[in-house]
Length: 360
Image 1 (tube, rainbow, N blue to C red):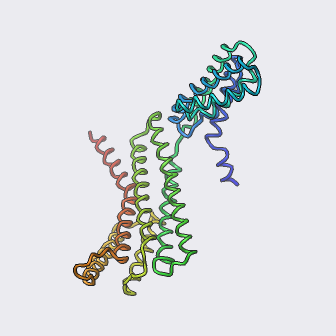
Image 2: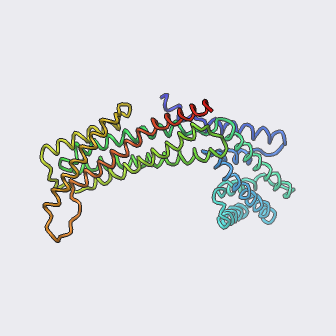
Image 3: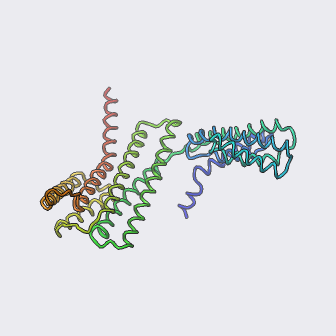
């Protein structure tokens, strides 16, 4: 229950409520209708300040177009069904032709809503509508910028940790249930679902990183925060490559794996160790990690030699399953080491920079 309430009452909900209150308060002071300003304020609260500004610049002219059509057709047809139809259709067509897609819905809604409140003084009503739209955009953008500024760093870090753990678990499942056993439909479907969920998690994290990068234009990040952001981008890139290599493992045909029982047991042990490292990054040990890489490399070259001896002279052959599996595991080992050593390297660089600044 606690987690659920946190998701409902988040910073965006609070900022939307504050923007609505301030917008309606200003309109009350000016004796202008607040409904149009409030609608604009609500839709202008975006995930980032950058989006609020960009889409606000589109919604202002789009709303002006909708208001103009509302004034035009009510002056011609009065308050009638034909007025609503014409105002909505022409607003949509014009916004679409001018590529004002972000403002199309708001412009159409305000166009038909204006028909009910316009009775006379059409030109004055049009400019008041522009004023209320401007108030809604400016207030919501200011609230988005200065009140609880968007910060996705915690969610990004959480997603990266969860993706790394999920990848380790998936690798473990491949080792236990698929890689060296019969690939029944239920097991294969489970791995494919986990694979798809992991891709969705990485896509979400990519969007959050884009949001965070956009925020850098409007909020100065410290040197440490910028470095953290670049590290997070590197980690997500490495996780995507790991995801790619796991996809190759899933799709590798395993009908002709020719390892001995000892070799197979060693591979399983190596995969389980790698999986454990990904699920518990705090236990990562560079020396142990590289010993396992060396063991895999030795087995890789052994498989290469055995493959070359069994090849028919003059016949073109591709990598067999043995070599492909070890190659993909070596690639994953390298990427995991890169992810887990990023924080260590970053902290060392920051410490060195601090010492240099102090000495100078």
